[in-house]
Image 1 (tube, one colour):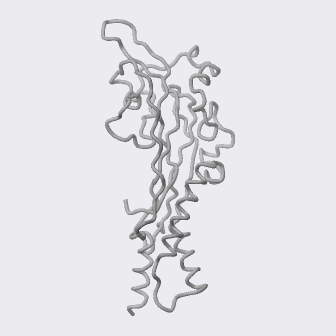
Image 2 (cartoon, one colour):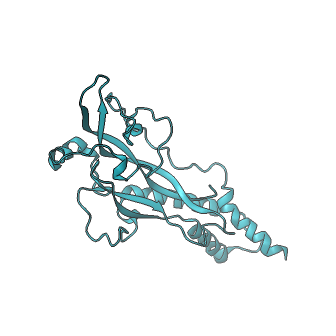
Image 3 (cartoon, helix red, strand yellow):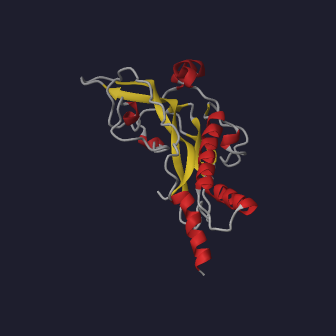
Amino acid sequence: MDGPHRSCRLLLLLCLFPPPGIPGPPPPLEEPQEPPLPPSSPADPTAHLLRDHPSAPVRPYSLSLSPEDYRYAPKPRHLRPGRLRRLLGPAFDPFWMATEEPRGRNGSILQGSPESMSRDLAEGAGRYHRKLWREAEALELPLGLAGALARQLRQWLVERATCRLTSAWVDLGPVFWPRWVRHTTCETGPPGCSWPPGMACRPAQLTRIKLLAWHCWTSPHPGPTNCTWRQIPYPVVAACKCSCR
C-alpha cells in the first residue's frame, strides 16, 4: 500500500519543492522618477500613489471606487479627451484602458483569455509554463514509471499547476482617466492547482500601467483648493502561479 501514497507525495513535490538552480521571472522594471508634486491632501485617496517612494507596496485594485471618498470631481471643462490624451502621452494602452464603456462587456466579463490578446501577458505566461516543465522534467518518479506514461503524468502535473488569467472591465469613476480599466485576476476553481489539493493560483507578477487621477490640494495659507490631473502608477496582475500563500 506504500506505492500509491509515495506517488502522491512525489507529485506534490512539483509545486512545493521546485528543483534548485532554476531562475524565476525577471524582477519588474523600476518606475521612472516623477517630477516634484504639489502638497497632498489627506482626504485624497490617491495621495499615496503620488509619492516618489511609497511606504508600502500598493496592492492591485486597492483604490476606493466609492464617489463618497472623493471630495472633488473634475468639471466638464477638465474632461476634454484631446488634452487628457496628451497628458497621458505614450502611457495610453488600449489593451488596459478605454475612454468609453467597451462594447460587448456581457456583465463585465471579457471573452477570451487575456494572454491571447496581449503579447506581454503571453510572454509572462509562457515563461511560467516553461518553468513548470523544467520542474516536471527534473522530478524523480517511482521506479517502473517511464516512457509515454511518465510523459503523460508530467504533462498532467504541468496542466494542473498552470494558472491562467481572467479579466473584466471596471469603471473607476470620473476622478480617473481613462475611467475604464481592465482588471486581471487569477482563475480559481474548487480542485485547486496542486496534487494533493491544497494550493491555489495567486498573483506572481505585477505590472504598472499609468492613469490620470484628479488630484486636489490646499495651500498652507487660506485660499481656494487647487486641482489638476496627475499621472499615477496603477498596478495590475500580469501573471499567476500555483502557490501556498
